[in-house]
Length: 374
Image 1 (cartoon, rainbow, N blue to C red):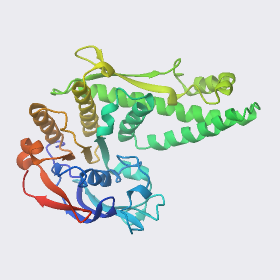
Image 2 (spheres, helix red, strand yellow):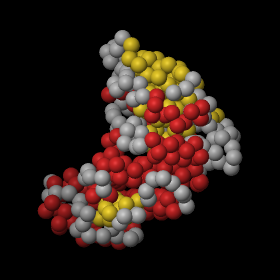
Image 3 (tube, rainbow, N blue to C red):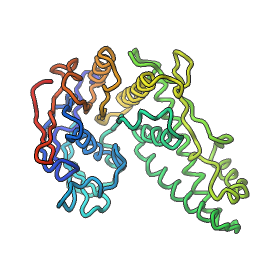
Image 4 (cartoon, rainbow, N blue to C red):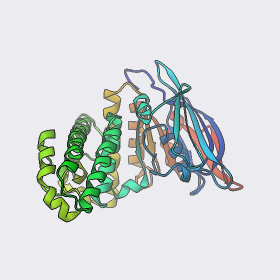
């Protein structure tokens, strides 16, 4: 709820030749959606389909070709109606013959950034359970996805930075020493890199504020953005000078050693003062859920766009008490949460506050049945 008004999100979803789903037409009323069924039946594929209505490559970070139902389908198509209290939009996204996906909003070609402005999406998938123990790359992707939820243009800024850095790294590997080849690339990297760093810091500030203002059953995490080596320059000019001054070392390494691509996200279990990487599996999961909820809470307070949460197997490591607390927080947010689990008992605490989908596999394809309750 926002100001006592239910904010709707996806009210209609059509899935065609996407992963294990040959064709599914579904209608929703804005309540959380609980999806249950056996492993391999196609539950996560529905969440992935919904995630394609946001910028990027979806919850699996898969190629468009990998999403096509096999055998025989030349491509896939997803369409949805997105509704809020003020307006509604018809959204289509599709891929043919494995090509990059295309997007239409209200019948007109649109960009991925335009999707991010219509709906804010946050997700939690099992692969994120390794967040605190994997390498910095995974934590940067996690933070950038959160940052993008606040600022949809962040994705394009990251792409600009990475493209310029790839070109600079090519010059470094080829041992090009002519300064003129580097100046324009480093100016581009400095501009984009400074914006990336500032946007990440702003996202962390929003998360900290959302954690501090909430009473929740999930533990708070103290977060800090650090560099794997040295310190991140504080402004664009300093970053440009640092890149120029570091060319000798970068030439020896064959890659760029300074910039936002060298940042890492550190987390500490606030109440215990223990690094997240040293916490138990259950504590790490609880900290992760806490961050996702804080992200959603901050978005609900600062954005007028509908909010969607995608929570894949979210209840797998939660006891009944924490599951009930999670569902209470989701319902209080007024967000349309899409959740998966192997059995209906995992959603018992939701009762009539949710809509339910039972997913089974029939003749090699996913079958979706709308049921009245868990």
